[in-house]
Image 1 (cartoon, rainbow over the protein chains, first blue to last red):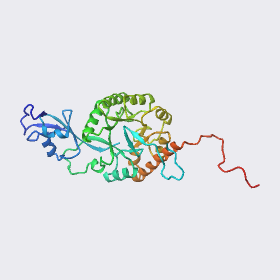
Image 2 (cartoon, each protein chain N blue to C red; image 1 turned 90 degrees about the vertical axis):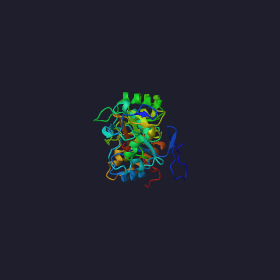
Image 3 (cartoon, each protein chain N blue to C red; image 1 turned 30 degrees about the horizontal axis):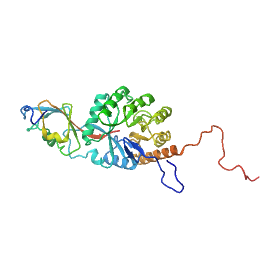
Image 4 (cartoon, helix red, strand yellow; image 1 turned 90 degrees about the horizontal axis):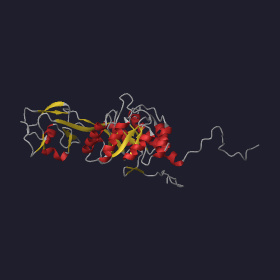
Length: 80
Length: 271
C-alpha cells in the first residue's frame, strides 16, 4: 500500500492482492476506496487492515494498493 | 442503599458502574448460536440486556452485500456493543482483533478480552491474557476480561487496569452452572472493580446463584440461545439475575443446620 503522494503502485489491471486469504483482482485505480465500493461494502460497518495495519475509514480514498498486498475486511458476527 | 422502603414497588439497587458508565441491567448477553437475526433480536429484547457481545470475523467475499448485518439488528445507538476475541489463542491475535473492532465501531473502546488456551475446554490462557490486557489498557481500551477463577490472577488483571473481572463459572457453553462458588467468593470479596460471571450458566437458578454470591453481573450466550424457547429463557434469565441480586442485597437468613424454628407462634395454641 502507499499513500497518494508515495511511490507509484504496481501497474493495475493484471495485478492481484490477497483479500481475506483469497486472490482478488486489484481495482483499476488501485485505490482501497474503489475495492470497498466494488465489493459492495461502501457505507457498511466493516474494518479494513492492509498488510497488518488498520486503515481508518476516512483514509480509504487515500490508500493505493499494490500487487500482493494482504487485505483483510472484517465485520461483527454473532458471538459470546 | 438497596433497602426497599415501605410501600415502594420497584426494588432499588445500587447503580452498576463499570468503566465509568452506569448500566441498568446486570445481565450481559451474547449473540451467537441463534436460529436467525429475528430470534437474536427477540431474545435480546426479552433479556433486557444493555451490553451485548459480538465476535469479529472476516466477511464473506462474494456474498450478497445487501444481506443484513448483525449491527443492523442491534443498533449500536441503543445497545453497548461489546466486541470479543473469541477464537484467539495468543495475545497478539487478541490485540489485533480488538483494534479492528475499535475501528469497526467508530472508536468504541469497551471490549471483552479472552485468550483461549485449549480447543477442548476453551479454558483461558492466563499468561497470554495478562500480556494482552497490559497492551490493551496502555492503548486506551476499557478491558473486561474473561479469566480463570484464580483469585491471584484476577487481582493481577485488576492491577493492570481491567474494568471488569469475568471468571468462568464452568466451561464455555457447558451449562454446568456455578462449580466453584468458593473461589468466586474470594474474587468478589477482593475485587475493587465489577466481577461478572462469564461462561457456564445453564439455567435461571445458576444466574440467581451467581448474583446471590455478590457478583455484579452475569454474561451468558448458550444458556439462552440453546434453550428450547430462547425468548422465554431470556425472560427467565432476566428474572433470575434480578432475584439473585435482590436476595444478595436483602441478605439471606443464617443457615441453621438441624435447628428448626417454627414460623408460627408457639403461644396461644388451643389445648
